Length: 97
Image (tube, rainbow, N blue to C red):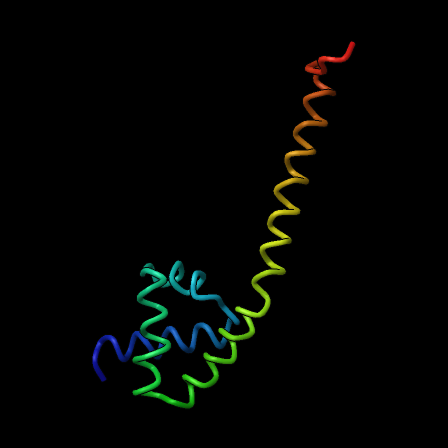
């Protein structure tokens, strides 16, 4: 097994075991998202088709849910901004006197 084939299998196992996104796997392995994507979609299919099918299921599920995760992130962002604004008013920075 070559180094990239071994890496592709390790990435595939990580994604399946953790339900990880390509971004999370890239961060965990210290490589680019492009490398992860290439390894698990092209190289893994040639070396371990069973694992490749399981990885595809996880990646397809993640893709289907990404709009929800994005909405949650936006909601959290604005809740934090609101909290900062509210706290500024409590600390004497309120322009309405």
